[in-house]
Image (cartoon, rainbow, N blue to C red; front, side, top):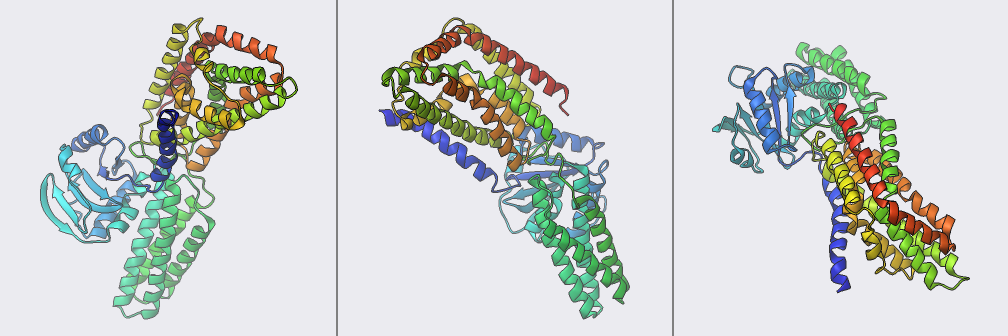
Length: 497
C-alpha cells in the first residue's frame, strides 16, 4: 500500500525532470505560424487576434511597416522562394507554417479556421494558399527556409533581430555572387564565394540558435564571420564580373554591420510573446525577486511545522547522548530532500510557464496570494499539518530524505504561492540564468530549516516551544505572505509591457 501511495509522487518527479529536457530539444514550437503583416492592415490584426486565441504559444507576428528587420526578411523571403513582389504574392498577412522545423506552407490573406491551420503536416513541398484555396506548391530547402526567415523573427530584441536579418542578407548576396562568378567563368572567384557563403551560413545557424537560447554569440562564430567578410571584400575587389563583385561587396557590408551589433553583445529581452523563447532581463531585479519571494516562502507554516515535529520525534526517540547527532543527521537529510525536490519542481514549473503569456504572471500572484490569505484565516488557531505530522516517522537519514521529498510535492497546495509566481518569472530567462536563480531561491528557502536544526540540536524544550509558536501564529505568516504576494503582483502588473 505504501508503494501505491508513493507512485504519484514518483511520476510527478519523473515528469518534472523529463519535461525540461523535452522542451529544450527544440527551439521552434511545432506547429509554428509566423505572420508577416502590417499593424495598419485590418486583416493582419484580425488574424493576429485569432492566433492569440487559438494558438497563443505557437505563433509570432513580424510587422513589416514598423520594423526594418521584418521588412528586410519579408523581401528576402520572396527572393529566396522565387516569388514575385507583386500585388498578389506580396499581400499581407503572409503567414509561414512550420512543421517539425520545416517550412510546409504559405497562407496569403486572413483565414480564421482552426481546422485548416491544423491540417498542415510534414511534407517535402511548400504549399501556397490564398485563403483556403490551394494555388500551388514550390520545392525548396524547407529547413533552411525556417532557419533564415522564421527564427530571426522570433527574436524580440530589435537590434539582435536586425543583426540576424543582415546575416541572412549577407548569405543570400554571397550565394548570388557565387552564381554570377560561376556563370561568368571566374572559377577562382566562384570557389572563393562558394566557400564564403558556407562560412556565413554555418556561423549564422550557430549564432541564431545561441540568440534564441539567450546567449551571446561565441567568439569562434564571430571570427568565422570576420574571415567571411574579408573573403567577400577580396572578391569584390579582385573579381572581373560586375554583378559578382557587387553582390560580394554587399555581402561584406552586411556582415560588418551585423558584427557591430553582435561583437561583445549580451542578448537582451530575447523571445516572443507568442512563443516559448527564453529571455534575458535585469539580473539585479531577478536576484531581488528570488531573495524576496523565497524569504516569504521560507517562513511557511507547513514545512516549518512538519520539520519541528520531525525533530521532536527524533529527539524523543533517541538516547540522551545520541539525540544531538541523530537530530543533525535526520534534519540535514530532510532539508537536502526539500532542496532537491523543490529545485526539480522549479525547473519543471519554469518550463511549463515558458508557454504562458506574461500577462498571466500577475494573475498567478493574485490567486496564490488570495489563497494564502484565505487558508490562513480559515485555519486560524488550528494546525492541520501538525495532526498529519504526528503520523510521520523519520527514524533514519534515508527515511527523513524520503519524507522530505514526499512532503515537497504533497504539501504543494500549502507552499506553492510564492514559488509558483517566481518560477513564472524565471521562465522568461535563459536556462543557465534560470537554474542559478532557482538555486538561490532554494538556498534562501531552506535557511530557516538549517538555522532551527543547528540552534536547537539536542534542546528539546526549545524545539517544543517553536512548534507551539508556529501552531499559534501560522495563520499570521500565511496572511502576511499572501498580502505581500498580491502586492508584488500589483507591482508586476503596473510595469508589465
